[in-house]
Length: 85
Image (cartoon, rainbow, N blue to C red):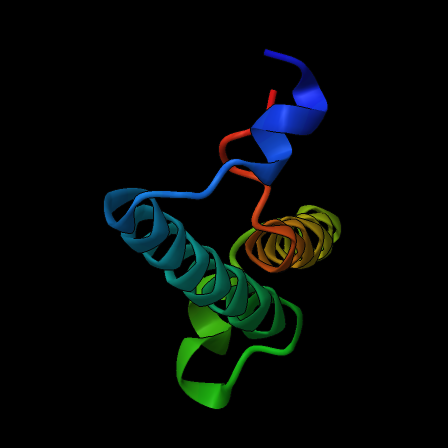
């Protein structure tokens, strides 16, 4: 079967449900990772004492990594490219 034929193939209800579940999971995890990045980049007064115990450069780097990974998860949920190799 050629790749073009596979892309035009209709999905079963199970596959549609799986795509929907993965999409929601990717959007949710992406939003969570972006919020975690903001949490580490701009700590609130309650958690500032705990975060300031660590190296500020590494905390900022971790926040940027969280933002990048969160953006990737949101993009992956948007593209819905789950069953293609």
